[in-house]
Amino acid sequence: MAKRRCLNKIRIPQNNVANGQCDTTLTTEEVRNINSSNVDERTNTLNGLQEETRLSSSSEHSRALISHSDKASGDDSDTIEHTVKCRGPTILADIWNQSPDEKWVVKFNREGQPYGEESSVLASVIGTIGRNPELAPQGYSDWRISRKNTKTGLRFSFPRCGENHIKKALGRTVKDFRGELKATYYEPNKHNRTSLENAKPPWVPRDQYFLILFCILTTGNVQRRSTINRINQKNQNMPHCAGRQSFAQLRTKKTIDSVESSRAQIFIDTHKDRKTRDKKSIDEESAKAVEKMKEKLGKLPNGIEQMNGKIAWKCDIFDQVIGKEERRGRVRGVGGGVCASKLWGDFSGQQQSSEQRGEDSSKLVEKLLNDIKVMQHKHSEEMRVLQEKRDLELKMVVDKHHHLESHIHELVSLFAQRAPTRGQGERGIRWTNVFLLMWN
Image 1 (spheres, rainbow, N blue to C red):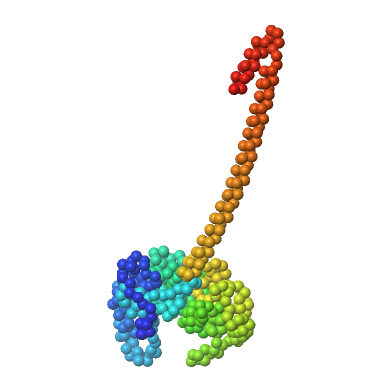
Image 2: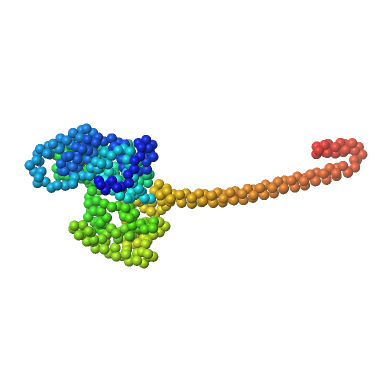
């Protein structure tokens, strides 16, 4: 808590928050109305009960916590001194009880990932929301099909580029909480509903509890995915030692002269002998990969790998050494929330920084102006050709008209010069006058 006091926190009037003028915050209007007395009650319960408790906004939830706490204190008074003391869950009471005008400012990079010390606070807040069934209902087989108003109630006032990261983090937290409930209270070979109901934790609603254990976690699709995930987890190798720090935070710390670290440089920094109590050394595969990456980086100028400001691209040093195909929706070595389309292709305007968007806008305007000039030149050429064609056609019509007119004048003069015959003079003259009258 003392460390969080030094982080970036600002005070914003409540009317600005309602109008959506705040850039990045860590709370919602719904969560801020949580009864502060519930927080005090939870902080005073036993550490064993705090293993799973979370914030709640309902009176029934509070009564369940109080009764369970009294029962535990009465029954276990003789054995409490022999229990193992544990820290308990993260409550973040200071954040939930702070003034609505105080906002935690979290920065997001162009890939939509939070970085800085405040990002750890954001992750902790998301964890407390995902583990609270009152705020994040558990009765859905897939987080993506939950009610839209549920997701809206959990959204913070944050930059648009961080929306996908927040949603994915909430989904992962809800899934992890279900896994904890299943591992603690569910036994595959015992389907006694009464025993399960007696073992139900009081902070989880009854309907959601049975939906999780019977209707969701025991279905064929979920069981099949769980089996596949267990196999994949056993096959995982080359674990990193970054700890709670995200790869976005590591890249920010390793940035030198506005040049971010590449995937290979981050891999080298996160795969080394651990400095923890167990003194676990790096695995053999990671050691070989680190040596190859260092060798390839040593051949580059200043040992820095960069291409047009990107942190990852196809056939970079990381891809050359690891040599595995990227999974859909993920890119290894850059952290969560980044998909291949953001790195292999052009950055979308939503994920780019303001400077990058300004440069792209200038390039787009310049391209449009050039296109307009080309279209104007092409249009003028077409109009010139069309005008020349019309002039030529008009000239041909006029020449033809003059030719016919001259020919008619010749005929008229020929009729006028012919001498009338006897008995037909008047008739010939009359026809000549009629022809001249018609012509005129």
